[in-house]
Amino acid sequence: MQLRTDLAVEAREIAGEELSGVEYTSESTGGIQIEKMIVKTDKAVRTLRKERGTYITIELPPLTDDFKDTDERLLSIGEEIRKLLPVNGLVLVVGLGNTQITPDALGPRAASQILATRHIRGELARSTGLDKLRPVAVLTTGVTGQTGIETGEYICSIVKKLRPNAIVAIDALASRRLARLGCTMQISDTGIAPGAGVGNHRTKINNETMGVPVIAIGVPTVVDASTLAFDLLNIENEQEWQTLLQTLSPNGRSMIVTPKEIDLLIGRAAKLISMSLNCALHEDFELSDILSLI
Image 1 (cartoon, rainbow, N blue to C red):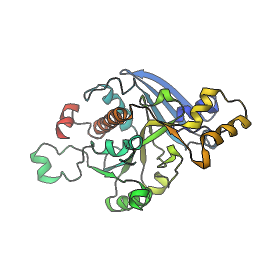
Image 2 (image 1 turned 90 degrees about the vertical axis):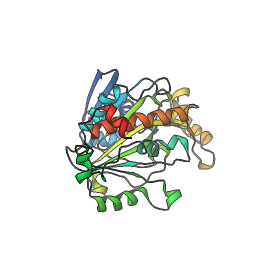
Image 3 (image 1 turned 45 degrees about the vertical axis):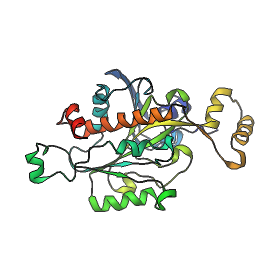
Image 4 (image 1 turned 180 degrees about the vertical axis):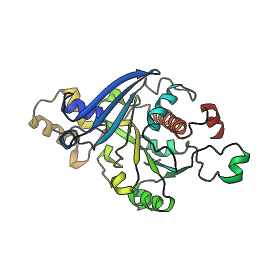
């Protein structure tokens, strides 16, 4: 039985928390809970179905309850993102997803609020006091069904032209549990597979395929219906699991569940990610200064 989740902490829960080859720490700071997991061995990779690397999970109060642009939690999250980024150089921020489908619109919505600065240089930067801004380029890819272009191909072509030092990919994720929707953020240095959360696997976007480090940031917005039913019904054997799958996936069509407040969740999650990332990219500027530039 394979339960679908994009979250490393949930993969660890499923596999057993005493799994060898994984380094796990947890701390509370600035009103948020930060869980860090480093996958170190091939055995852990196979068991967790997660790539080697660092996975940081941020536990937050539900975004549908309260969130402010100047929330101090942004600075704490930004610091965690900064630890995974190269110190200097151009960063390409990519918003993955489909703006026409609300649960999948997180990437484009967040990317639209990223401060793009690659074009601010030379005398313009010096005369406006913006010469300490880090060069940042922003891209939204759409999905293959809209463009006819594989997302990985699209990004790779831009990378060859711009030659960034790193890529930050933002995408909606799938969780195992409803309780994590809209109150969990995952940051990793292992890249991302667009569409994996809804079972639509595409070319991976990672260091191997892009030739530069890829930082992935996401918030879970959906739960696979069969995975949710497994937890609610406490399925105990393979036969019951197969019967459940046939019921919830008629004619091979899988179903996903998303909260009724998904519009509010996406808007606030996009703001949380974008502002945290802006803080991480432009550490010489105060949050209020960044807000004034967007």
